[in-house]
Length: 77
Image: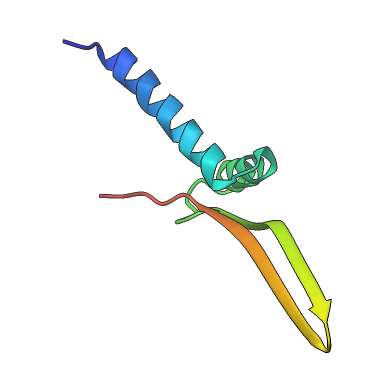
């Protein structure tokens, strides 16, 4: 039987990998943490950041692609 500490560390590692795969930056993590620290009763601290942007212009047309990442922390029941 696994100890709770081992399961907790496994879940934290998995969560960190998923955040990295999605594109959450360290700056975004710090912003959410500071929001929560300043106002602990805040219902859902969040931040949004554009991580990648691409635009192409040709013959009067423009193609633009934007990737944005939003990090929201909510309390679940």
